Image 1 (cartoon, rainbow, N blue to C red):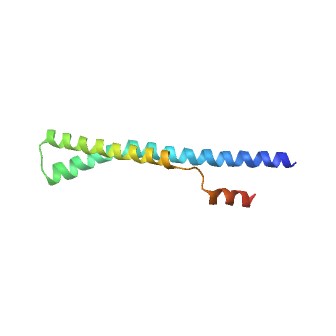
Image 2: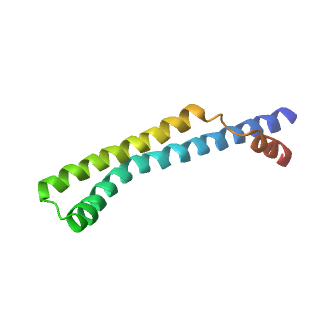
Image 3: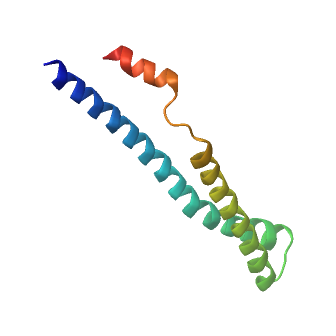
Length: 100
């Protein structure tokens, strides 16, 4: 019976880790998709067309540059998180063990 309970514990911990990883990757996928698109349209219509009153071609170019910068920031955040993330914290591991 102890081995069955231990196997269920491992399975629950694996599921928690997989769900945590899924949430992180899903968040960064959404960020990488939506941030450049929203940056492009926000800077184009609000900043370059509205405030600076640039021509259409100029505002498109500057908005595209802003979107590329936003994309690089989002990718940099993802790479930073992937490189420096040490996995589940010790406190979370202890809490999971304490609950079971």
